[in-house]
Each structure stands twice: as structure tokens, then as C-alpha cells.
Length: 106
Image (cartoon, rainbow, N blue to C red; front, side, top):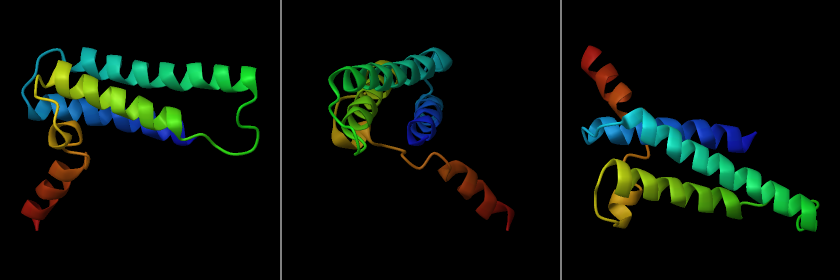
């Protein structure tokens, strides 16, 4: 369930990064980042189930790795920016422009 929310978040976050950087092929890169994250999750579930690595505790490792790979795709391939922590994790608040627009209405 948490992975589904993270997958939707990654799709929105990648799309917002492309819009804010005026990139081309935004939907393609958002889909690629989301599919790669989902593939990492699915492959780890298969390996975990096959090897019985975590029977009772949740594994956060593939979620973190999948998020970092999605951040790399978003930064390097979509936005064509340098790989710095600021660029990798920029605009994590995907609702910021919506909140700013709401303040203008008041």
C-alpha cells in the first residue's frame, strides 16, 4: 500500500520537475521513472519471497533505492541538471504551486 502511494508520488514529482524546468517529453520520462521504481519494487518482492529474507518485518531498502533511481532519472535525463543533492531532491513538495495559488486568492 505504501509503495502504491510512493509510485503515484514519483509520477507527480517527476511530472512537476519537468514542468518547472520546461523539459520536453515530460510524460515519457515520468512514465519511465515510475515504471523503473515499480520494477525495482517488484523484483525485490520476487527475490525476497524466493529467499525468505524478511518474513515479518517490512523492507525499506528497495523503496529507498527505487526513489534514488527515480531521482536520478528525473534530474539527469528529464531536467538535464547536474547531480547535486539540491537538484536530486528539489521540489519534493509537489503541491507547492497549488498552495501558492491559494494564497493569491485570499
